[in-house]
Length: 245
Image (cartoon, rainbow, N blue to C red; front, side, top):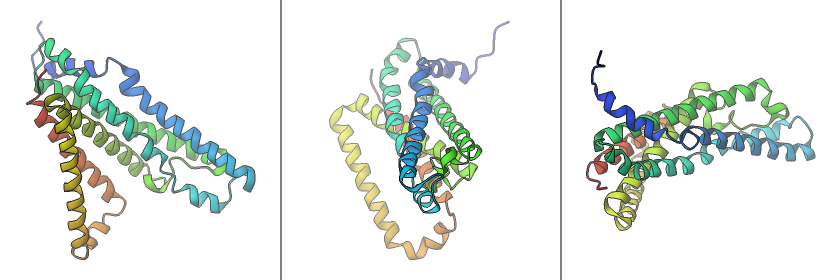
């Protein structure tokens, strides 16, 4: 019996194209987090050689500002977004996909990668607690940047950070494919100027809006990052409709 044809029927092959290199799309981000964790523990061990083990409270407080998890992922995932929108585009269209289905298939892949990074971060956080912070009171995920051990904040932070990195890469990668290097640089400059203007407005109106924003607490940065991810996704979708092979 024939299977019913749905929108997902045409999107799924593009998702499989994104996942064709699973090491690149799924495993490498986890390897990066593992490497960051090992480096953080090694730094803690070097400090402990001088101060003793487990690390004293003063050093533990300092390690709470370790933002390695936040800094280690975006660069690689940005490149994944760029490559996904350039390397796979011609192949997808050659096999009969539309631009729309190609974008949605890649976007589903981005969601899957981001979900894996978020879940992986939760697992590492659990291991960190289970081992009493890697046996020496070092910290890689129980840090200020990820909500000081709050599992919801840890997952949400890493999930939206991955999303915005992937979709930002997709946005600039699509502009490069559609319009070339010059317009890619122009887009980067325009976005930088708009960002500076937005920050200036926020500073100017801070007294009027600070109570509302500060009330969001640690979720404020997550909400802002999610909004940026949505804007980057919308931008990449729009440019993708204009892109040529």
